[in-house]
Image (tube, rainbow, N blue to C red):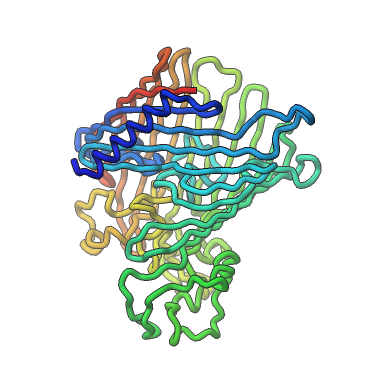
Length: 492
C-alpha cells in the first residue's frame, strides 16, 4: 500500500477516535467498517449504484467509514416561541477503501447556514434532485446520488415555503455553481438550478407537484488545444465570461451573427447554446389516507428541443410508491418504477417532422465535454445509463471498446421493484431490477441484465450489523454473486 493511502487511513482513524471520545452537543457521529466480496471480483450493480461513488467495482475491499453531522438548531426562542431564524450546521463523511482499489474519499464536507427559510451551503453534500421516492428508486434521472458529490456553492429554499393562500401554493428550489474534475477538459464548471411547486396545503389529503431542473457543463479549456474542423479556428479555451454565464443561466443561444472564425468559440457552440444543457421536467401527485401514503411521479427528459416538440415524450422515469402507516412490523413501503430512454428524438434528423431537431440526442454524452454527464467516472444521473468502462465488453463493436472514456450505453428500458420493511430488531429491503440496454446511437445492441439485492440491518444494543447479498445475471455486466458484511455504531 502506498504512503498516500497509509497516511490517509491513519488520519481517518485518528479523527474518528477523537470525535468518539469528545462528543459535541447537537452532533451525530457514526462509524462503520465492513468487507465487500464477490464470486467474480466485480461488485454487483445494486450494491455499488447510488452510493455516491464510494463502492468500487473491483473487490474484495475492506472499507472503513466515519461521519460527523451537525444539523440546524431546532430549539425555539424564549421570547417568541418561534424557531430561531439563524442557525448553522456542517457535515464530514470520510471513506477509506483498501484492497483491489485503494481510495480515501470525502463524499461529504460542507458548511451550511440557515436564515429563515433560506439556506446557503458550500462544499460536497449528498443530494438527490427530482420528484421521486428517494428511498427505493432505481435512480432519479438527473441527479441520483450515484457519483461522488460535486463541490459547489448553493443558495435555496430546501423546504416548501408558502407563497399564496397560506400554504395552498408553495415552492422550493435552489441555485448553484460547482466545479468538475480535470480531464480532457480542465477547469470547467457546473451550473445547476431547480424549482418545484406544490399545490395543496400540508394537511390536505391530495397534493399536486410540478417543476423542473436545469444543469449545464460549461467553460474550461481543452487539455490540448485543437483546430475546429468547421471554422478552422484554434480552440484554446471555451467561453466563460459574464455574458456567456448569463446565456448559460437563461439557456439562450449565442448570437448567430457573432463570428466564430476569429474567436475561441467552437462553431457548434457559436450556432447553438454554449455548454452542455440537460435536465428533466417532473410532475407528481401525493395521496394521503389514514393507512397509506401514495406517491405517483413522472420525470420527462430534455437535452435539446426534442421534448419541446414532443419527439421524445415516451422517454422518462415513471414511478408509484406506497407507504404504510402505523406499522410496527412487516412491509412498510413498496415502489415500482419504469425507465425508458430509447427514443432520444428519433434515429436521424431527417426523420423528424421539425427540421431544427437533430434526433439521436445521446443522453449524457457531449462532443465538447467528452466524458459526458459523469464525475470521476460515475454517472451523475440514473445509474442505468452506464459508462463504457463499467460494462462487459465481450462482443461489443471495436469502436465502442476503444472509446470507453467518451461513449455511454444510454438507450435503456428498465423495470424496478423495491420493498422495505421492519421487525422489532431489524430493518430490511429488497430490490429487483430488469434492464434491457439497446446501446447508444448509432450502435444497436441487445444487452440484458437481471439484478437482485437483499439487505438486512440487525440492531443490537450498541451496534448494528449490516449484511447485503446481491447477484447480476446477464450480458450487460459480468455475472456475479456478491455481498457486504459490516458493523455500524452511531453516537448521539
